[in-house]
Image (cartoon, rainbow, N blue to C red):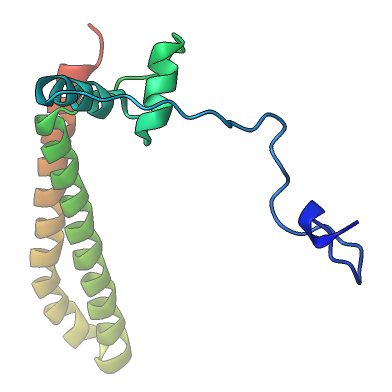
Amino acid sequence: MTEKQGFLPESGKKVGRPPKIDKAKHCVMVRFNSEEYADFLDMFETSGVKEKATFLKRHLFGSEFKVKTYDENTFNSYQELKNIKAEIRKIGVNYNQFIAILRSNFTEQRAATTAKNSVKLLSDILLYNERALSITLQLVRRWLPK
């Protein structure tokens, strides 16, 4: 076999992507005026399909596709929860480093008096947890079926 058929001549091994069984050989062009193109783009964006050609083929031949909607309030809540999680992680890492330093560098009595300062870190974690819980409860009320 030759290189064109997907084989290396000296080793006989296949290379490249396997050929498609039924290649799309025919091209059809569609022209839209400005108004139609704006409508087409709206439909395309709400469909969630990545390519316009795929969207047209599915729409033309009646294949099903999902329509994705975007709720900005939910997205903002998600971003806020993500930021809260990051803050809690930062505070937790700082707390762990603080305790490790106390254990290794101070006596037990001195570490106990200094550890009282760590209460601020723990109270920050509690505040962030309460905030995350309230956001989560708002999302549950809005999106879970009643």
